[in-house]
Image (cartoon, rainbow over all chains, first blue to last red; front, side, top):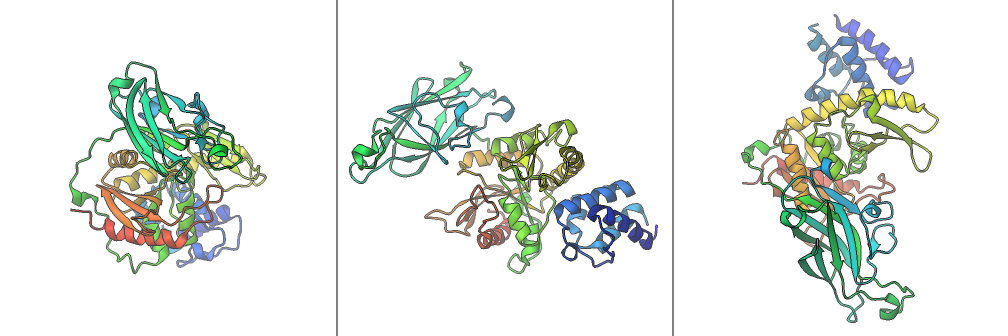
Length: 81
Length: 377
């Protein structure tokens, strides 16, 4: 699976979680850039990612996530992309 | 107390749980304490199921008036046997050892407090208070004496290569995880832009409840039938009650924003995920766990918490209490293996955890991280 495909699929997840079409995903996008992106939303994003890609993120991976690019890298590594 | 392995905290404040244990000799509870009535007061608590010697900690303040009444004498009897005597001259934590032989034969443990210097303020100081008072009880804590823990000291060093003095506050606060007792530290993290994912970050987690959860690996938490959705006293927000252990926490959903069933479904997904993460965090050495009691906690009881955490791995607990004469705000020190104690200038008021002392929390966290990198020899 290419990074572009992952970004596209993550875009759907973000739209579902934040209930808006206005978020444009880019690698450096972080919680600071999106109003309402707190730990609760972060959990919703991670749960949706784990379900969609059938992966489990461990605590080190979770704590290392600083932005969307980090999340894409973890997904890529875990799905063998 | 069967499911709590012997720990019990009796809160004598108005919203506390003391009604279930108070027998004779008490006035009606006030916001933070209950005054004794007359010269003798009694409590009864169920006998713990686990055999062993126990400790009863009394958090009390005496009624004093200059030279006229300079101290209150206190004698403690357990199941009829006199086991401790004190002269109380200031707000104190009094430790009473309770041998198992004294309590094993009966279903209930009866504690009698004799305070022969009880007096009426109206007669001593002229204050128009006709009650006959001696001691204001804030809390009684009952727990089994801790077994010492032995593990190589180096195993307790927190794995962190950064210089705590140079860390931006957001990164600093991400090194810590709150275990309760309320959401004050979780909110301090939020004020710094740190949003760690923590099972107990916004929970009410009294120590006996936390101990029960830790010992059971929080098994069952998050199962739909174990989640109860309630409305807060002010009718403005929802609260989630975990029926497995008794944790209470904020889902941060206002009444009207969602239906209770929607919240239950959401929590049934989130809680197992957060439980899994907490168990992993407890097994690693990267984080320092933080606990502050809503009342002053006796160290032996906190050591039981440390022991419960060490069943997972050599983690470090930062226990935070209010500053005292010997420990100014911001001080952090090792008090036992795996246990740091920090001192804060003030805690946020119970009714408003947002009104917290952020600078002091940050100083405590920086000092704690420095110490945690090198456990005491």
